[in-house]
Amino acid sequence: MAVLAAGIIMMPALAQARHAEDKGAAIVRTDRTAAHQQVKGASDTKILDRIKNILQSRDGKQTQDEQNPQGLARWDMDSRDEGGTLIFSDSPEYVDQNGILYQDSVKGDARVLFYHLNNTNEPKKLAVVLKNEYNGANTVTITRGGNGQPSSDYLKVGKATQLEYFSQEKNQKIDLQPGMSRLLQEEMNMTILQPGELTYGVFDFHADHSVLVSVIMLDAYGDPVTAVSNLPVLPKDEMRLRGTFKGMNRVLSARKVYNPGEDGGVYFMLADNKSDKYRKGIDATDGSAVTNYGNYGINYRIELPVQDGDVDYYLSPLGGVYAGAMRSFQATKTYTLFPTPGAREYFGDRTAPETDTMQAQREAGKWQLAQNTELAPLGESVGKGETVFEFSPPGASNLPVAVVMLPKK
Image 1 (cartoon, rainbow, N blue to C red):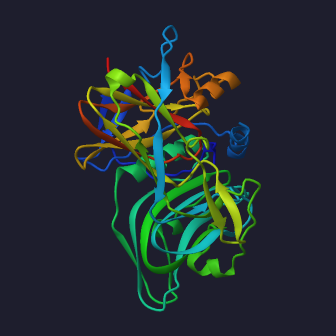
Image 2: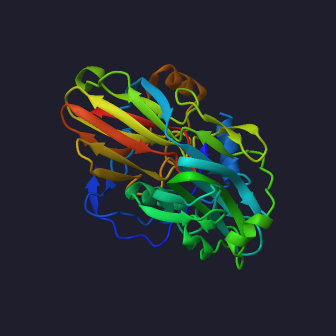
Image 3: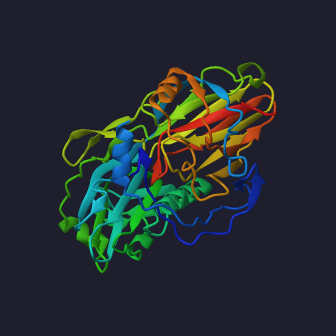
C-alpha cells in the first residue's frame, strides 16, 4: 500500500454516473443511481518506496492563490474506534508464489481488505475464501464492497475501488453448511491477474457464526476453494502490512461547533499518526504485534456541526499524489459522492513539499497554505446544521491529508 502512500484497488466496467459540477469537482449524486466513475491513467511508482518515504517523515479552483496565501488554525477533533473486525491483507504486497497471504477467523461485523500485486511471470488469481467453522448452518451477509479490475495503473485502481465502495450498499447472502467453504465473490474465480497487475478489494460483511477468512493467490487455472487447504502461509514482507484490527471504524467529532464568521479558516489532519494515530493489531498467522501504517481499511465518520453561516469544505493532500473518493451527508439519508479530485484523475503533484519548518508549524496548530496547495472541493453547507463525511485512506495514494473548512465568500 502506498502510505503513507495509500494503496489498494480494482474495478470492473463501471456504470454511468450522473455528474454535477461543484467548483470544478465532479459530484456523483447517488440518491437516484448507484454511481461509479471511470478513471484513466495513473502512476506506477512502487508502493513500497512511497511507504518508506512517508515513514521518514480545486480542479478549476483547485490551487490556493499564490498571491494570497491563507493562514488556517487547527480544528480539534475527538476520536473513538468502534465497530467490528478488520481483516487486512497487504503483505507480501508483491507476491512471487502461490500461497495464503493472510488468514484469520472472525464472526459478527467484519471488513476484509486485500491489496496485492502479481510479481510472477504467469497469470494468477487472487481470491478470498470463507470456511464455516461453526457446527451448524452459517450465513455471511455482504453489506458493502468495492472490487475492480486488476491493473498496473495503481492510482486508477485505488480511485475506482473507492468510488465503487462508497457508492452503494449490498445485501448478498452466502449460506454455509458445517465445514463448507465458498468464495466471498464468485467473480474471483473468473478474474485473472496478469503479471505486474495489482488487485484491490474492500468488503464489509456480517457472519452469524465464526468463519475462517483466507486471502490466497493461486494459478489462473486453479480452484480457490479446493486449493486453499494445500497452500502454505507466505511470510510477510518488510513492511508487515497485514493483521487483524478490532474496531474497524473511527469516529471523529469536532470538539466545538464551527462558527465560520468567528473561527475563520480551519483544518484537521487525517492519517498523520500525530493527531490521528495509526491502529495497532495482531498478525494472526504468527501472533506478532503489527501497526496499520496509514489506517487502511479503517472507515472514518467525520462529524462537523456548524453554528451558522455558509461553509466550503475541501480535501488537501500533503504527502504527494492522491486519488480516492469520499461521501457526505447533510440532514437527509441521501448522500453525495465526491471523487477526490473530481476534474482530474489524481492531484497532489502540484503541491510544493513542506519544509521542516512548515510541517512543524502545521503540527503545532498553524498552517499557512503554501503556493500551489491543491484543494479538492467537498461541497458546502448552508446555515446551522451538521455535515458528516465518510472517508477511508485510498490505495495507491499518499498520506497524510487535511480537511479544510473555509467561510464561504
